[in-house]
Amino acid sequence: MKRVESYCASDDTERSLMLKRYRQYLLLEKSLSANTAEAYMYDLSKLLSYFDDCNADIRKVSLDDLHEFAAAMGDLGVAPRSQARIISGVRSFFRFLCLEGYREDDPGELLESPKTGRHLPDVLSVQEIDAIIGCIDLSSREGHRNKAIIETLYSCGLRVSELCSLKMADLYLDEGFIRVTGKGSKQRLVPVSGSAIKEINNYLYDRCHIDIQPGAEPYLFLSFRRGRPLSRVMVFGIVKTLAAQAGITKNVSPHTFRHSFATHLLEGGANLRAIQTMLGHEKITTTEIYTHIDRSRLRHEIMMHHPRNI
Image (cartoon, rainbow, N blue to C red; front, side, top):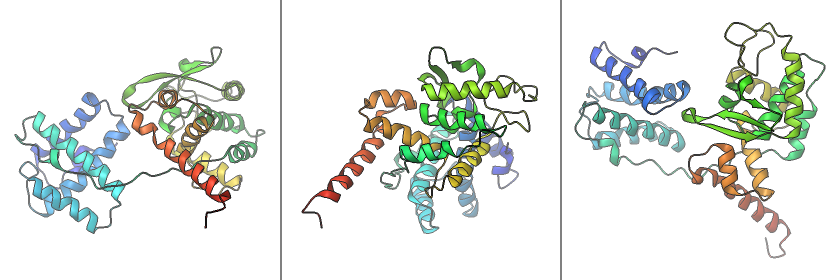
């Protein structure tokens, strides 16, 4: 894990302490995961570096200064979505400064994010998902595990971090559910398909033969070679390899199965609120992006066959 001091450009002990307190604020009060908090700190380092170069004290910058910082990001070619993420972190940081008494005013409150539009994520067809599953070598020691991973990602619409954090105690396979720990450590019960249950059970038989390292026993998905929980990077690698073997040219990641899960449910007539619950979205507006995917596909399908379409 990166040391907080590495985000400080100088030996400013007070600022180092302030950043440590901010990181604790993200972890404890905002209930962010360690990875998300680290991403906030990394984005914040861009702000600190900018004002260090300007010889400006972060505790004294104005809204105009922040506007100049935002403009500088655009000049450097930072994509609008990345700008929006960084500015969101900047606003969070200045709220913290006010809460902790480092500042009396909050210039970040009026700082607006750039317009990003909606990004429609890649979605796999059912045939493409079948192709990925079909190319898994079940004679290899990792075969049933990898098939269980793909089936679980697609059956439950999990984030990769949620998949990696699944524990044996989270399995309620006889009842057809798993317990998922999502963002902010919020838990939800998610139904599991029969095919996913079958593959998890197949993998559990193979799991008994893994030399499990101390502390890894509770976790469901383990590395056969290391006996430790699979990391997000390892799951990304598994998915990328399988997609390539299946001849799929789309940019496929674990999150692609989450998008495909939601899109296929919506196309099949599932209620948007039910999909929201399954995905663990706090706001329905986050889930509504899938209605835009469905509409765009509907328009494409209609216009392909409409006699007046040029």
